Amino acid sequence: MYIKSLALDVLKKYAIILVLVGIIILFSLISPYFFSWRNLVNIFIQQSYVIIAALGLSFVMISGGMDLSIGYQISLVGVITAMSMVWFNLSIPVAIMLGIITGICLGLFNGLASITLKVHSLIITLGTMTIFQGISYIITNSNPIYGLASEFKFIGQGYILGIPFSVILMIIFALVASFILNKTYFGRYVYAIGGNEEAARLSGVNVKKMKLLIFSLSGLFVATAAIILVSRAGSATSATGVGTEFTCITAAVLGGVSFKGGSGKVWGVITGVLILGVLSNGMQIVGLGVYPQYIAKGLVLLGAVGFDTYQKTKKGKDNKILKNDNSKEITTV
Image (cartoon, rainbow, N blue to C red; front, side, top):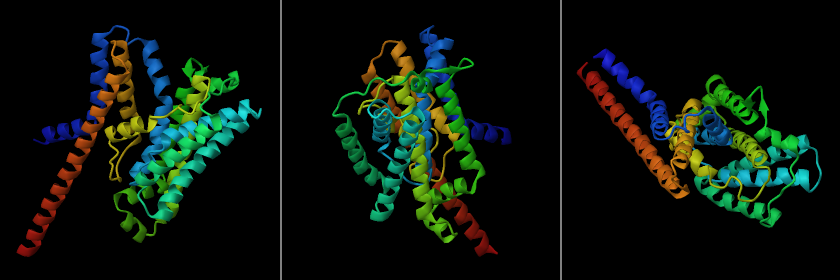
């Protein structure tokens, strides 16, 4: 009985990895080209910027917030970074720094607006995404920015010892995110705020300051993702990165990050992104177009949300039963 219970717990905890493995096996059987080394590396290259952006979003979601604007954050950061190099002839390090600062400021703006207006960040970022969209299109006048330096393109297209540089950056940011969430007081406060904001505040956590830091940190991750995407594409447009927010939210929920906050792991988010990436890549290889991929991603999101709701409901019922049992024992004594 104990072994069966342990097996069920392990299965529940690592079910998402089994899903990823199952999808890989399925597409490998359908197409011999899918499981080639070149295609697997290509999947990691394509998803490297998504993973970094999703990790940034996961900080916000674990703390109980939401950011729908990251797609247009990527757009605006990419445009400003490319504009700095091509239009104003700034050096690559300076342009990258401007892009990073822009991303941090956009995240900080979201946090400030949410705290000042006392409105949930879901609604705030629904508004700021259109603001960022408008600024991006005004700057470019809907025209792409070409002529990026080859040194800059190396970020998204280059290799170091046979490993794509974008994948190296992805690994570094994943390790940093994992360290912050699991080994620092900041990470504990992120979980605490998402679990119960009022309890965290009463425990001495400066909730307002933490939210500003969380959104700023998310902006840093999203800005890095934007720079990787633009350097890989070799140009910047106002449409670059738009829609990434949907993929990141789906991947985060699929990876165990709750909409209500308080739970989620870095490895789960990464696995969630890879599931969507493998699904998209596999469907392309077998000849399915973009629109069926939208349907598949939508179904995955609905399934992930449904499972998250089921887990939360079941956990609430179990806690209620446990409290009733304890109260009966106290009454009996």
